[in-house]
Amino acid sequence: MREVVFLLLPNVVLLDVAGSAEAFRCAGQRVPGSYRLRFVAPQPSVTAAVGLTLGALEPLPAVLAPEALLILTGVGGEAIDPQESATRRAVEWLRGDAAAEARLLCVCTGSVIAAYAGLLAGRDCTTHHAHLQELKRAEPRARVHDNRIFVEDGRVATSAGVTAGLDLALHVIGAQQGPQVASEVARDLVVYLRRAGSDPALSPWVMHRNHLHPAVHRVQDAVTRDPAARWDSAQLAAVACTGSRNLARLFAEHARCSPLDYVQLIRYAFARQLVTGSRLDLERVAARAGFGSAQHLRRVWARWEARPPSALRGGNPG
Image (cartoon, rainbow, N blue to C red; front, side):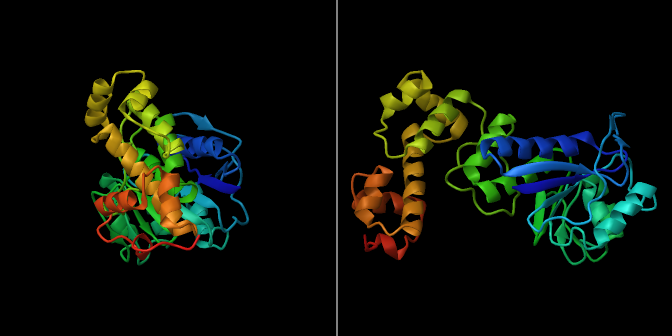
């Protein structure tokens, strides 16, 4: 089980905490035993920017496990005061060895706190648009990017603030638990699954899922659970509890593709996993993924990939 440790300071922005925490909590429900949340602080309680007091917080731990996620949340106000008592103790703790091997995720002005601790020197990073200059002053050696949802550099990731912390959490969940889990968590939270502009292209498993329509999601879930099923327009429409023409309209409006194109995309993604992760020959890969033949699979593969791998030109031994 991976620990997700939130470091809280006085005047903390609650949404910085709640958004990421709910994402990891939901992921833990989707994949039991994957995450355990902890909330630590330099003092037993802190009062949030909205006036709510958060109590019974754990003290700063002596050490974090190497696989832990440490989340620095932002605080309200125009600027971070590094000499404020709790902030100073948090910065000193961050400079030590306790969290040296943990993965660091910074939400909003959590990036500025990390900068004061010397953790962003020489790194690409970002923060809330109103605090970009503050971040540059706190760590002149950092490469500060504006107009970015989040930025990753090695074991450190920084986000633009508030709801962007949720985007970063979904990105990490997708990397650790798979894009399907991240998509399911996004739907649980009724948010879009976004990505930063510099991120690689979305996995086929989450393409066309950046919408909130329940019937379209229901069809997409059914297809991803069983790509090889004999999906046709009538069967897909039955899953959505609507007519074929209306389902086609809904897919065009919300998923930006046709229902049968989506089936083909998921079958391709499944076949790709089999080609790269098994020793099945191409005919058996095609059959398991729902294609009529290896030749059909090659045609579909060529549609999604400019240069198919050598496995598609011959075949792996069975």
